Length: 264
Length: 264
Image 1 (cartoon, chains in turn yellow, red):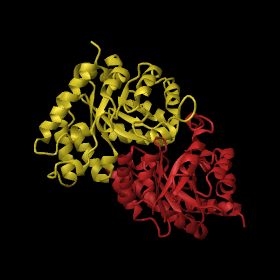
Image 2 (cartoon, rainbow over the protein chains, first blue to last red):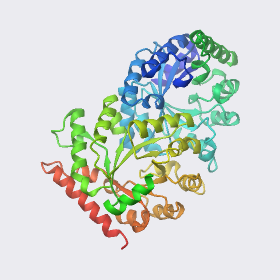
Image 3 (cartoon, chains in turn purple, blue):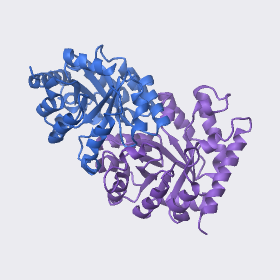
Image 4 (cartoon, rainbow over the protein chains, first blue to last red):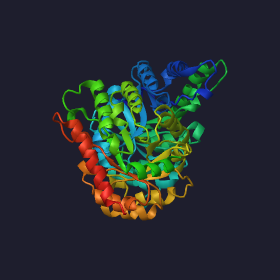
């Protein structure tokens, strides 16, 4: 079961999730072409391995290379260390029989331990993912971008709260939520609404979210399972020749800082 | 420009869009494996070609085969007849820099003329698609499934209306909406709200939506550009040996029925 596995890893390996969003323009220049992107991803996984409990790959950064990007993702999966979760940030969601195909693609073909799902199409679009009961589903509730204010705050309660309120009663124990760290006040509200369901928290680092709030409010100081995602803050810690040791050092710093905010 | 092209094709080739959602279990049994799915898709395109102005492929049905499914989609694209639009039903949407990668994957690699996009993450998640100004974007407003009632009716005005009200003022002329034909009353409201923006209307046939309402209300009897999507009603018109002539006949019937509801 995903949630038990996540909870166990949180206690042994912490809460840091490496966001694998490879942007060629930000990498050291010797990583050329699609092969360079693959090598960069694998080296970043190896550099940060001691400090992370999960790796979250965003599908868009691989699909932009077409079918070759999907093959790349399959090969990268083979480099995920033991006791590290493989999360695919796909934000899919479609009518029921179609969502089941996406679930197959992500869980069976690409072997994800958990995925992100978009709630717009409602329960019957999310359940095909949840029905893979040994896997995890992080439903988008409140995202980290500015555009979150366009529709996620619509209505009363705001839509993002309604998503949590309704979906937590769908009766699936493998459900969690994406809550952006950039919305500090809402993180507390989300935690109060979501019972003990785990959060996947992006928006730390380059996007400006507070790590302290993410840990103290989003993870209740480590009392609930969850993941703090950091991408650019590790991947592009340096573009000089020391970029791998810089990535490892950055991952260790994020890990240490998260630990420092956990309640003893 | 996509909208001009769609409008022109509506007048010369009608409004019928073939939904390419290949389900192996529903095909004649001699289509075996992934190669069989590809052959089936190509033969269905050829059979329905005289009666359709667009083909909408749902990505999930191809991604379920992994990278091979993406290659298949690229090969199928080569069989799209001239003067037929290639629409990728992807329902993507992510934070801005990530959406731009999806746009690249769909428009540049897979050569879509238009795509479907999920509005949950707001304006900055949709604009990277809209910025491909020669391409079309159909934003999900009201979907055809039962789960549409979970969140799309949240708030006042209901979320799906709010999506139209806000996005139509984003200033992009290449924007349209997905409005499910299964919601008959809402189709009229949507048409009144959306100015003259085109609708992509699924939910006809197997899902039970009314074709007459879709044409009279959704397309204003042909006074605005748009697409009526039919998938199972053509693809699986017969599983006997006459399945290809049955598909052609079904496509012609849908085409004729649409034409009969157009205002003269």
